[in-house]
Image (cartoon, rainbow, N blue to C red):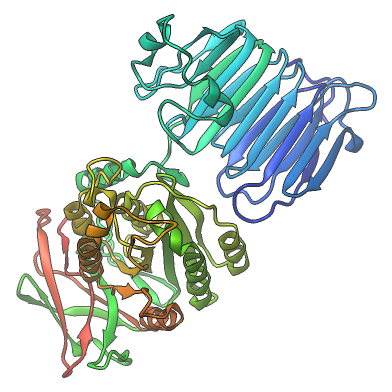
Length: 553
């Protein structure tokens, strides 16, 4: 781009409907378009900048019709004006120029880029996205990243210069002149030889000036994750000794820092926090208990409770929706369940919504108190499917935000699922995380897990499950029960015999009457071993349900 003679940006924003699927269509014949995709952004923002003269408000026209939001830059005097556009990562993007360059930074759901002679620059996390390019002539300059999980073979095929991402080792096969261009029909649909991923970018041109492709790593805060990355979370958790169950203060510190109604203890001695509901023999919550009402045993040795609290501080409620293929018959029930759970939270409670769908872990909304936005997002939930790496998704759901809370806040994970992980019935497409590793992770995390079991997969059409899937249902339910018990949570059955509307008050009642019992272990050595903890209430028929222990790290 030429240097700007006069820079006078004009900023405008567009409103988008909730959820995924909105289209942003941009045309700029006289200049370039730079797009930045932002995870969690709610609306596009467009900034126009003059190159040969200051930008004017009438240089850009905006339109909106049936979920398509148009941005057209057409200065009356033919001046060159560039556009800088920020979009949510969930949009479908269409960008057209003549000679102006097009650039994308970040992950978008779908992008179709068309230019005659402009330059294309793409800085994208290619672990999550696919790319195809088709041009009448080879770009004058090509710069590609060196990746260990993808290659970018290109060459002349069927009258076009083509380029796409592919698995390592594909280049040799593509070079064989006898090999048909088997992916030609899929280029316009954004399919990749690496399989279905989140983002799809297609480029069409006549004689591209240059093609520059660079890779962005998928950071730990990404809203889109490959399920297999759960293993990295677990390995890091074990290697670095991340211990949400307790905190160690810096040397010389013995103060107490408080959050609203729930203390964060800062001391040279490790403090263990245990959270869970206390209920009587009839399942009713028991208020008013004090430290002297609890008996704590660590590996059988008595401990002295340093803090017992049952106040009602803000709570973190994380909803994980299993939107894989086996739960397709329950889509309406899942959306209604998400609405109800968001509704039972108090104004000061934070709610997050995550989803497993299309073989990906996706954040629909991070923890927030904005109930109106949550409801809009639930109404716009995408119609997903795919396989069921459920165990991986549970790890990612606990690590996305809860791991960073380090036991300082009360957090519950509600998993709305049929409980079926593909690993139960096939070696392919299941979780890379074994159930035993998941169970160990849940045991050590200060998060209450509440699986809500949807009706089991069946032979009933139109979503008939295979015999192999149906055979796993009892084992799937048993494992969800183990996860709930290990965390101090509880399993609920949302099958035909159990009304979902009677379920929400039960969960809400538990979350609003949760105790925190904290103590300083008498053993100070951090040997990394599992320490079993038992907490008893010194009242007949009263039970404190919490996790079973922690790793001394």
